Picture 1 (cartoon, rainbow, N blue to C red):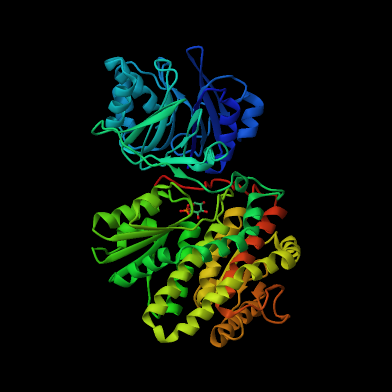
Picture 2 (picture 1 turned 180 degrees about the vertical axis):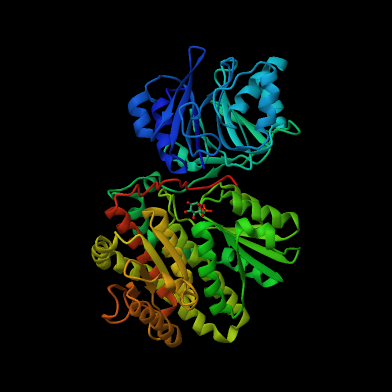
Length: 603
Ligand code: G6P
């Protein structure tokens, strides 16, 4: 949600700190700020606006200091104002904090400290952390003890960091159900809400666990358990990603760059160790009940995978949106829950996993972000290795996740039906061809899709329609369009469209049809009947298909004629380009659409 960063170093940190904040901006972008310790005093610079706007006004990177913390905000409690922007200072100005998450008991705590004479300057839940630190320091005159006492008072989810003139060369930080990583460098230590905070400066990473706190100075760090006070020994993970992957590399937007990385990430997933995939397949096989879960695009990945798994194994696996898990899910020791998440930090998905775990279920996940909470908390993880995804919208990571689950389906299918080994090998070979087909779309169809986008951008209401797995693809296509263009797009099956929604069809209503190849006879024919039904009512239809030019469509994207098994993956790539180019035409804030955040770490 919000982005957190901090550096303590032998050298000036301000330039690095603001750069690190920019690398986290996709986590939230309504206001931002920094705090340094200089000459025994706290100096805060903050305001509403993007980092470059606030930097231009407030000169965030001007101060010279060897210790600083920084924050970029996605508002939850309190509007978008300068007072609500982080960092927050304690009443007597001795502690300054940055916080990510929600302190659920902040009202009670605020009331309590108000009675002690503490005055509050913001409407946020976060400010209470600074006040509590100061309050407890007054009692104990010990910064570490004040941190521990504060942790014991807080309820909710949080990752926070503080600096104080009482201990001017150290950053104190902790986490509970909100991400916080430590970056270990030779002459500087870093904290970050994800590794983009410091990947440019160090590739040595440590993940803090819930209930732990860390104290960092320029030479190193110590991690302790907040309940026992015992020191925790941690292994350092070395990140192999190149920092270059977090840069735009000549593309106008990260979204376009990341769509262009789709061939590569599919290839990478195909190279992942077979043992990891086999283990997930084995867990599925051993479970009596299996759920696939996620949020947003990640959830739609599970729905697409559901169709693939059904095709490959002949079995039906449940998919359930993570936020509804507790309300309807049924789990016990024989249940397996497989989560899908780019960030590995999505609150609802982590909650679903916790809920399942508490009832004895096994858990697994397909995750992109190294060091993320989910990657540590599940019984088995597949790290998809797609590299940093900076655009708030998930494109390349989502496609790679589908492929990871297809591989799992092939593994399972081969296990259930060893006699069909040749057929499964054929499927494997087809997926290996996917990168080249997607590359063809990028090279040969980008221009056409852009032209189409320029013709249809004014249509503000859309139905995204498909049948079978193409319905699942249409869910993802509609979400992409919504997120980045702010146009209304609703997805449903071609069959369902006739039962109510068809009354909306007129010349103002657009429909995108994801049409299966003609070889899938029934699906194709039924889909085309739905196209006719919409055309008969004067609706506008954009067809995405791989057949010959069809005059029935008002506009069409004709995809390469790939093997039917991988066609849905090509449709996904095309739908990503379509959303992108419509957003370009509308001049939307493509990498950071309004109101969104890359990882939603709050309920
Ligand atoms: C947010 C983003 C969505 C994303 C979802 C799941 O809502 O705006 O684009 O699909 O989170 O994120 P995850 O990191 O779990 O894949």
